[in-house]
Amino acid sequence: MNGKLITFEGIDGSGKSTQIKLISDILHKNNINNIVIREPGGTKISEKIRDILLDNDNTISKYTEALLFLSSRSQLVNEVIKPALDRGCYILCDRYIDSTIAYQGYGRGIDLSQIKVLNDLAIESIYPDITFILDINVNTSLSRRLTKSKDRMEQVNENFLIKVRKAYLKIADDDKKRCIVVDCNNKSIIDINNELVSFMNLRYEGIVQ
Ligand code: ADP
Ligand code: TYD
Image 1 (cartoon, protein in one colour):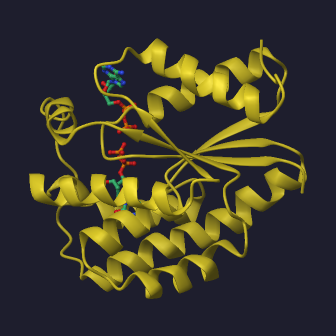
Image 2: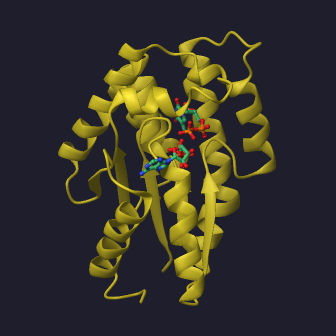
Image 3: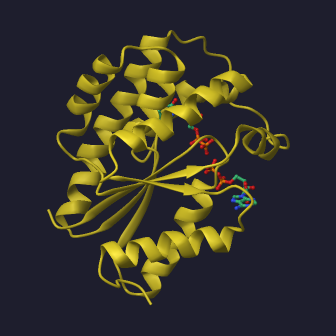
């Protein structure tokens, strides 16, 4: 396996999909084989699980919710991530293990050691090479989502998002080697992108121009 798994984390609206798209385009321009995936989703089964998880008509217990995220992840690892790593591909993944720790662990209150066991089962030792944690304050997150309709996971209050944001900073503090916190408050999309690309260039010895 000589590909790289790079994950992007942060509260809703922190700019993950925007940055992933820009980085993917830059990698393609530099002839670097890469794919973009998102969680939950990325395979036929995982997209069906995503529909269940985000559907406002569903009332889901916290353990069912956690297990569905993990089932989606397990399928994604086997069907997409492992084969792509074997091909030497860079994988840009919108959310991964840390979302379950932050949202289901710190957010919903599921025991963190249980989440760790389940995450380990789902990912079969495929840990991210780098995890970028895009940090924004909760007010920015809430204002960015005012204009769009809320899915089931977005029906949470400000306190829940405050817990999740803090959780990400704790996760980063606990694993400084893997996690890079990027302060995205009051910064333009392009400035944030330059920071991410600079970091990747340092880590991967000038892979992009
Ligand atoms: P996420 O994938 O983390 O939910 P998105 O990339 O979808 O976040 O961004 C949410 C919204 O915020 C989009 O409308 C996007 O254009 C906007 N946005 C992203 N980054 C910034 C930024 N640095 N400054 C202002 N707006 C941003
Ligand atoms: P999505 O629209 O992809 O995220 P975003 O709003 O950041 O663009 O929705 C995924 C939702 O699922 C998001 O609210 C975070 C949540 N989630 C968890 O609670 N646990 C998980 O393990 C994952 C992967 C996501």
